[in-house]
Image: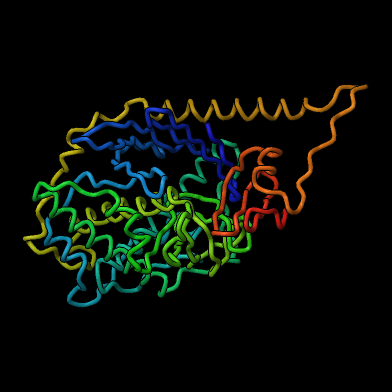
Length: 418
């Protein structure tokens, strides 16, 4: 069981078993239960999510990239290619759209940081705002649920030391939406032809090496390391842009923060390192939310100022075969998530009690503490401190992140301790 307390005050609990089943829980009570299954010789993951009283399911393809196993999003259904084309290309003319959330609590909380566009020239720009709004609304609901559980006040208005989402950031997200629409349209045609989808081609394995300025939107709170070796956070709705392909042998990718909400978050313009598995989850979040937005667009076409969907694009989506062959959703997902959160509470209390009770007995001389000194190698440090919580691999420079300090190595030798 891994329990992580984020810089933003969040808590995330993850348990992964040897059969690749998994339970993930957040302090708000949200989370998922993951069950693996095989289809045509390929391993899929079926996740039953539970969030704010609502259960839903998603599917993922497990694949390996540079020795790291990640789970790439696998759409459970695909639309007609004409509909993807309608969503990809500009509309006949820009249209205004009334979102209907102007008076909601979550928008009042984030209103100084996010404002929807006045008009929409294409579905991709509309989907960019849809992606941001859905991310922020979900975050506010989770914060409110966590505050209610703790018996504290509801979330207060956001601090003003932030960099609001600019039209340029929105457009960068919209361009990435177009790339993801083109990718899913290609997958839809491959599926219709009976071809298997390559998860690496659909996931970050291609994005990290196709020389495109890919943009990712965080779907969960995440602590990362910036170029100065300092720890900072990205949270739901933050946009990050890929800085380039990762170095040979690296297990992280470098991204530039495009927007920041202030506080403990990474500053705008900072270069940060994100682990491959976390980056894949960011792409998953974008694709999942785009698919939900496409469903809304198809249903709402011709309403509220949106242009009508062409008749040839109005066909209902087709369910993918791997989803039809999946096991049923876990009916006990909510109970398992809550049970895991309770076990994490108990484990942390036990660890805290052991720490309080530790120390040499009266009359017993404690051994001299081992020291970390400049020039020690990685093996010497890990022999003293054990394995780190995280490793930031920057080629010749490596940062070993422990709970209360960071060890910086250059060419395998300690050069700084923070």
